[in-house]
Image (tube, rainbow, N blue to C red; front, top):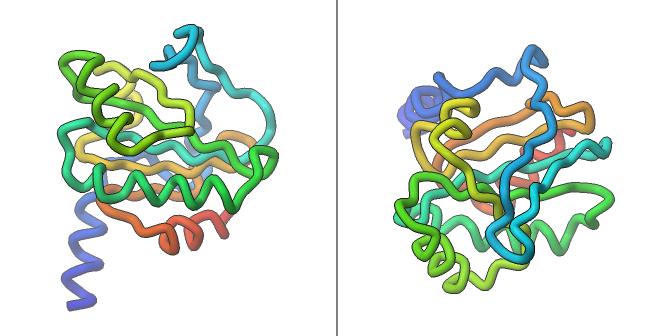
Length: 155
């Protein structure tokens, strides 16, 4: 069973961005879904968890609530959590998803270009960036709060 799990995990991650320090993510500038729809950019030196989801994704519905608990554990100075909506046909889909989960974390609207830039080919996809914007961890599929905390130990 463990070998099967490891093989599936490897297969899901094989096309994602590298975690060997060779990829540095520039500050993202995407429109916010709520509020003023201004561009949100991050350039402050702090670790970041990027969570990419699709509103139709069942696994995303199961996993996104883990981010609430994670946000409560880490202060904003210690970790930035950014949620990026992808693969939606209308903003109403994203708003319905967010209403169902009572999101208090900023949600950005991504595009097909965003998905290509981050090599997103399944949902949810997570990237953890260190304070220098280098990818230190990545994953696709369900991740528990405990799993996310374990990945954050790399920063």
